[in-house]
Image (tube, rainbow over all chains, first blue to last red; front, side, top):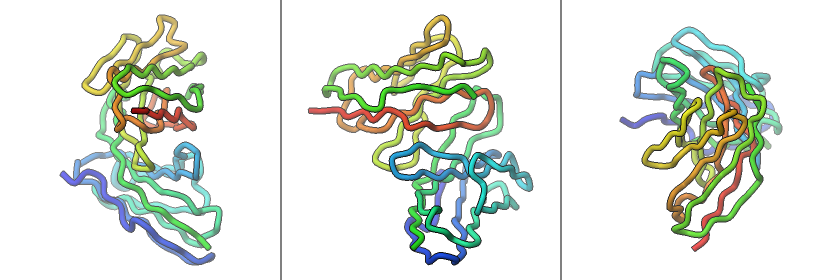
Length: 115
Length: 108
């Protein structure tokens, strides 16, 4: 299993540009998450999904959109990039089940700079 | 979810046990305690979790006080590769809230 994969690894955007961060998992997990991590800070939840076709906002959803058409993929869309979106973005997944099984598996991250 | 308090940083000698404290005085009865770590800006990695009882796995031990208001993660024989940011999280659902964590530096 490749686990959780993210592309691209690095990206520089100009203010106002748009892009999609890709996330794929091959573990047949129902739950998927997008986090952002600013320098020296913990991770903040942007959006999450409990299954294909179901998404919900996390702590910091403004400026982002998501979709979940398949179990494997959970892309994150930035429509009008702003310098405040400069961050490292992590995708994660977990299997469906009781809270006791809340082990999330993380991808390697995408480092995004908006200039 | 209940808030956690962790020291900002701590050092540990290689080969010695590392004891990482976490306070979660407002924890609810249905909230679990989770520990994750993040090595050098990689994605966080799950370590261990528990509800009431002490837990042990191949990576670490988790000691939860009887009143559940605090816990300690124990890395029994710290190595240089254990240098990381360690996050203590309490949660009762499928979402996790990461604070700033404790930066642990293992020194040779």
